[in-house]
Length: 193
Image 1 (cartoon, helix red, strand yellow):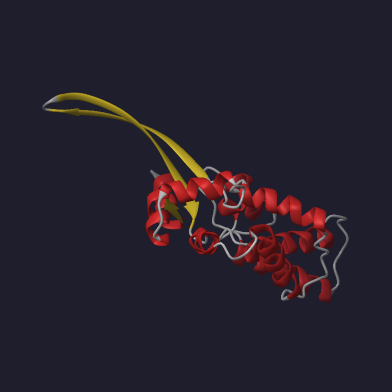
Image 2: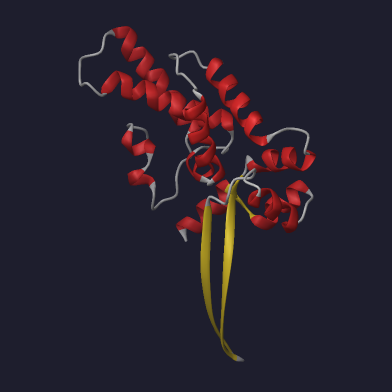
């Protein structure tokens, strides 16, 4: 039940997302099919076996779980006034500009790749909000950590300070991860708890 508790704490069910955005499943399905809304980060296939005085009962369900930040994203899509990819790219670039750890070039190819992961629901799983700002922060932090540690050299005081700031940034942007994913997560890979 640890996974269920984690999902209830950090994510919204499809029904909760729809209620928070005051919309219906048809609208969510339409913007998802159009490639503008991230897919659910988790999909549970549940089988319930029940025994009671009246006999046995079995039923199956599928439950989708979305990052809490997707409320903001879906509301923006329902407004319909902005191109989703253009907004994603602008928010990503603005977040990078506001995080002066190191320069990281957000090329069009990089942004298109990040957009595909965003739409697939990947970043809803591995960042706190699932939104472009946390995605940019996480990617920048990982870039800095790798740049400073991949060659195994001894770091000077300034580099150690930058490494500490990058790890703090990664900690703030990264989700705590589901129990079964923690050992393979970026948190584990880059020395976070």
